[in-house]
Image (cartoon, rainbow, N blue to C red; front, side, top):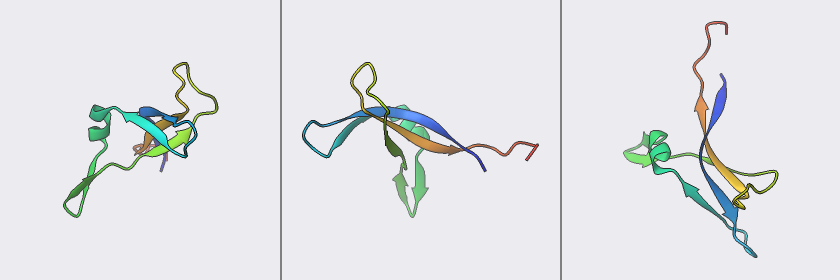
Length: 73
């Protein structure tokens, strides 16, 4: 079983704090929601970038998406 990353936002570490503030694309976020015991959830990962991007963002946000099995598997 293979997984791919679907990027849904970016974030930046708040200066002098152990907080990362992120902005998420709501359309993408809703595409990856799931139901569990009558509640709606989204499971995502926040990862530090190797270096800040051109906008000073230090973190990326993504969901892991299960890829369909190929016929060769």
